Length: 262
Image (tube, rainbow, N blue to C red):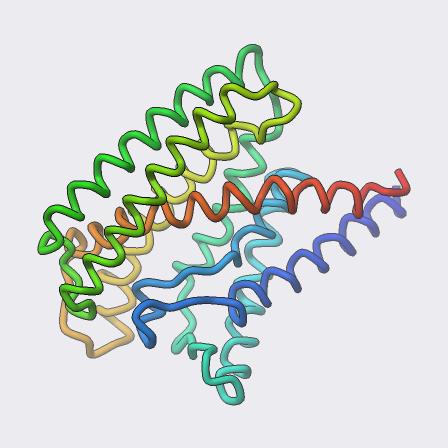
């Protein structure tokens, strides 16, 4: 029992360390300097893995520790590495986001049920279709992306990338559907990532930015909750595609490393 607990703690520590590096060091902000609004990173992927492998409680713990430690690491690294953005004042809202990644991933993978692959397959097709439609709409109407920090060209580029990625997601879903269950990544992963993105990025993060972060910790001009949604909707298929491509492989590697001697 002690050996098992020690293994879990050691594995979580390793995942948290990797997650901090992915979240705070290996990140892309577009345009540069707007990390608070538009940032691409794989920082949450280790929290998801912790939740899937060890359950929702350990997933929540991993999310909590990674976010708090990551804040101080990012603050320190921003003094020496120019591409690392300073997180500014600590805000508990983003910690809640990180905790939810571990909780929801853990809950969704705690149990399986009959025909779940077929159900999640249908849901994945529906989700990718909706994302493609939304991306096309914003590509045709880039002025609806209400982001003052983006130029008209920036909006068109991001919407175009989002549209292309959403189309690739639709094609990937069709290809996976034609493959055997043993060879394709679980459709549950795509559905889980979509639910996580909707809850954290489309709902909670705009609330944190508008009603808390800007309201109490910043002198930035007030921004509407609804004005923050279009750019996040456009960004959605890009994030989900990246996570969907990377997560199954990292999960497989994590299982082989962490459970090698069991």
